[in-house]
Amino acid sequence: MIGLLLGNALRGPLALLAGCAAVVAICGICKCMKCGLRDCACMKKLLRFIGHDEFDDFELMILVHEATFESKAKMSSIVKVTAGRQNVQTDANSGGIFQQPLHIQVEQGTENVVVELLDSHSYVLAEMKLEIMGHILNEQNLQPEMVYSMKQKPRSQITKPKVKLTMVVSKGGDEETGLLAGMSSDVDILVRQQLAKAKQEGHHIGEGHEGEPLSEMEVLMQACAGPLELFEGLGKTHNVYVAVLGPPHSKRWILGIWNDKKEFDSKRPPKQEVELLKIETVQGDPTRHHVFVINCFDESRVRKSLTFRRIDRARDVWVEILHLLVTKARDAKKAMKTQAGSFRHPTHHGSESEKGRPSKSPRGRSKTFMG
Image (tube, rainbow, N blue to C red):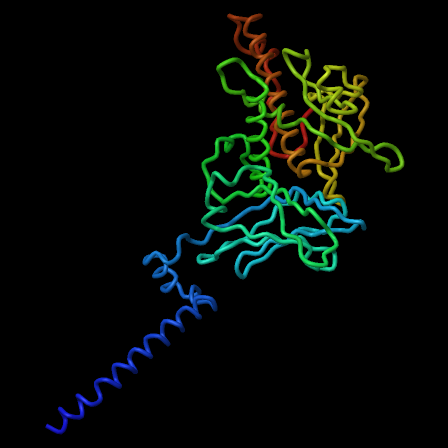
């Protein structure tokens, strides 16, 4: 009887204590979720299973094209990207043109990706937040070269800050896989973006045969057109526009150099031209990560070099697309020789027919071409 009375008397306080313990436990879990609860694999899976977390870990590649703002004083700027406990940033640039890829691991449970514009002293000038579910994992929002307005910080001494980004959530199965075999992951992603942009622009301006998609060569030609800086003597540079011409508009495959895009659009002859088949190497400058060099031969078989600095895209994108174009032009020449040889000697076999065949010199993925 005494035990029953004690049990009834303690039931209320014990229930109250249990309720308080439950509240403390829930608060503790919520706090731990912010302090690394997901470091435990079991808890991480549980939070995904019950639907609290809406996505698994993924890698995000952000190509920082440029940052623009108005300021009375010229300053170097840095773009920093933060996702939860992870952060990466670009090199400092005085012109605001970065063309630099950043890779960041977005951990499960992260709510936003924060993009900040810093000065050379790491002082935050402006920032913006992008929701993971509402923006990053929504493919409709991840268009190439999107311009975002940023919120300037008080006393930052800049106005109208904006940043141009291309964001790619890591995935496979892209159409250009065959073209891009052998490239590093960074360059692969950047070249894919450039080819996709070229394909879209080519359809917009009506390139290719009516009712047919652009060929690989047409896409590469469209992708290999744009502004560059051409080096002259004593380190001086001037802006030029570069594009590739080929059949049926030109008898030969050539890399043309114009003063500007207006001259190119007006179909004026280039002020300089290099035959693709006479390009020996295309290589990045190891000491200047924005510069690349084309080594080639002129009409007199005299070796010369052209040095360029990139403007609107990463240096290695130019190198890889030029490499692909030269390879395609050489393959096209071999195919034409083989076809012409078969017409001239339709019934001959053996050593005589070898005269019409292209050289079987091996050519790998290097940027050196056999002359």
